[in-house]
Structures are given as structure tokens and as C-alpha cells.
Length: 342
Figure 1 (cartoon, rainbow, N blue to C red):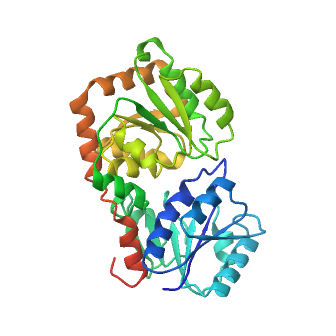
Figure 2: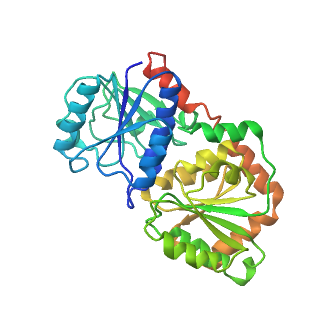
């Protein structure tokens, strides 16, 4: 197989979700004997270490993300590596980037929002529940579409834990992204410090890219052992699988939790998550409490206690979510990239 070139970024604003789901695709590509290269402007040290540990390599681009210079540098790198496919994942690759992109090689665009404008892509992947071809009205006739959670890009370590099964513990897990620019973690902490949640134990997963991680860990760990923080844990799949409930946002994490049959309480922390959060709730696959900044701590505490004390409802959410995701999305995507039918 030829090398796979992936153009994405992780930052305090973007978070790490774009990179981590691309890593799932890269790992599947490498499992089949290929090489995966990530083109990034300034990868955060922990993210770079994670990519390299998985066997991928990183090429740094001295450009402004999303600029025409970015497109030119990415194209030059693709030509030098001799790749067949370039993968784009991130909102910065807009019309200006595409206008500067040469018509060589195949382009896979990973998207969450839909695109009303004309765009360059040979293949579009939108793994979100409710994604539809109507979200891309200006697509070219030759552009193939991979839509919905059956194509969710999940890393092998989650599949490994799902295959083993897990015994549920008593500590809920709070996981709100690699950087949590919305400060939603603080909102959940506030709810867990209320009188009605004093019997609730929780682990807070803090991303390595979170610029507030020192302050957060200090604020959480003062309440240890009831509340504890962990920064970028290596055993994240096991922690997810053992939790009786996860408080999370509407990114890729919800598909990881769905695979592991972990019940979810959703806070929307970004505009591009609203539709997914609403659709998961409508499918009975999660409880959705709304936009993070509009949910009062008393209401969040009330819903947390309600879910933790209603086992049948929680189990029903988990079962509905699990029916949406089987963990083989990355394999299906690579199959299509290698010439298979959609």
C-alpha cells in the first residue's frame, strides 16, 4: 500500500478529536501494511508522542493552517511521498485551501457539519448520527459519501476492551475533550459539589492539551478520594468501560462510549455537536441536557442523580447506543479507499 497522508491539527481551540479519529484511520491503514504520515503545523508534544507511539510519522508544515500556502505545502509533501490518498480533517480547510489544491491524487474529507458550497473531495466521511447526502447539495456526482456511525473511526484499544467486556464500577467518568475550550469540566465539577451529589464519586479525565489542566487538577483533587483527576490516561478505554455513567460532549467520544455500552449524559460544548447530541437523545441512546453554559448546576446535579439511581433507564440508553456502533468503521473506510464499494 502507498503511504497515507493525513492533514489535521490539534490545539486548545480545536481540541484533539480530529487527530485522534484520524489516528484510528491511520492505525487501520498501517495494520494492512501501509505507512501513515501526519502533516501538522505545530503538534502538541503529547499528541506527537501518541502518534509516534502508534507507528505514524509527523511532517511539520511551516504555514498558516488553512492558507493557500498550506495547500501548496501539503500537495508538495503528497507528491514527495507518492501517496494515493490525502485525508483532510478540520474546519480550516475551506474554499481558499481547495482553490490552491492541485487536482492530483484522491482527497478524503472528514466532516461533521455538512457543506452547502461546492467543495473538492473524492470521498466524504461524516460519521455522525443523522448525516445525510442532503447535507452536501453541491457535491460532485463522482464524490462518494460515507455517512453515519457505521463508519465511526474508533481506535483498536476501544475494540479490544469491548471484546473483553467489563464489570461496571461505581465511579462516573467526566470526559469533555482534549482541551475543553468551553470550560464545561468546571461546570460539571460545580454540579458535583452540590449537596445532592455528595455521595457521587467521579473521575475527571483531563486532556493533555487542556491549558487549564494544572488549575483543574488542583480544584478536583482537593476533594479526593471522592473526586479525582487523571490527565490523558493510557487506560482510557478501560475507564470508560468500567463507568456506570459518562458525562461527555458530542464529539467522537460518544461513539467510543457507545461501543463500550457506557450510558451517557451529554453537554453540548460546540455548535457542530448540537445535531449529534439531539439525534442521540432522540434515538434513546443518551440523555441530553443542553448547551453547557445554559445548564444550571442544580439541574445538572438533579439529572446526574436521576440517571445514577435509575438503572433500567441507564441500561436502555446504553443498549440503544451500542446498536449504532460496532467498532469496524475504520476498516470499512479503508476498504472503500482501496477500491471497495460504498
